[in-house]
Image 1: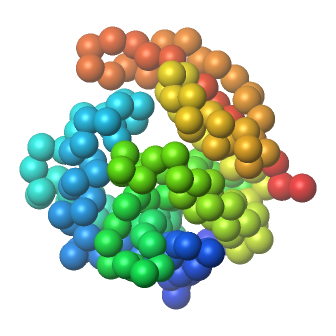
Image 2: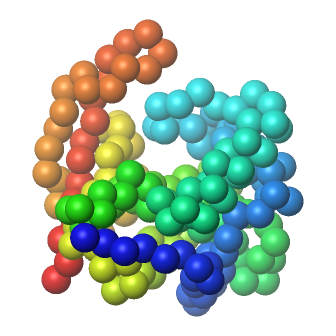
Length: 183
């Protein structure tokens, strides 16, 4: 069984990016991403309508991190580490089966620049080496071709296509599941 410990918080640096802890002062930036219709197009959740929703989400994220139930990194550029451009996380962690789901979102102004590809690589490495995961999964909207390409480029394999398995906004939606096994 996994025994997770996200303390101290594992800050990650890449060539261009800093992946850091989510803080209360990130509420406005988180809101700007989570209330952007384009950014939320494939998330299958309602865009945020109030800044207080971002503040509440930050509290939830911090509580989950404190309890070692999930971990979320803010994605920012090294030259502007205080400015959030996205997030990447492990959630739905299954300690008994050494498995976790990866999730990510990026502000549309930063799309098509290799940012998520650069961020996902060290997060995958962290999952396998520090968290001791055996497998990482991603559940995505089938229409999200960009997310599929990021996953495939990083070695994920399409494991399944689940028809109408998610109920959102008054209708049933399909989900594609990708998985990556520890080598």
